[in-house]
Image (cartoon, rainbow, N blue to C red; front, side):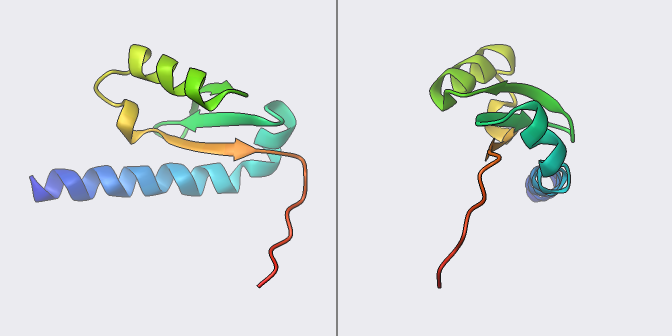
Length: 81
């Protein structure tokens, strides 16, 4: 059980790393949308997060909770600390 959980967490982390690495490409293709990534590939996208999650649960009932989702935007964000 623990090995399986560690494997799932590592794969989830790899998907987020992939999302960040490909962010510039994704923001051109899917501006102002939520992008869903599983196994280091885009599996769906939508400007409405609730609709995206609903579709993911229908299409991937066993794995929908393992999908990395990130909102991509062309706008620049500044963080003030």
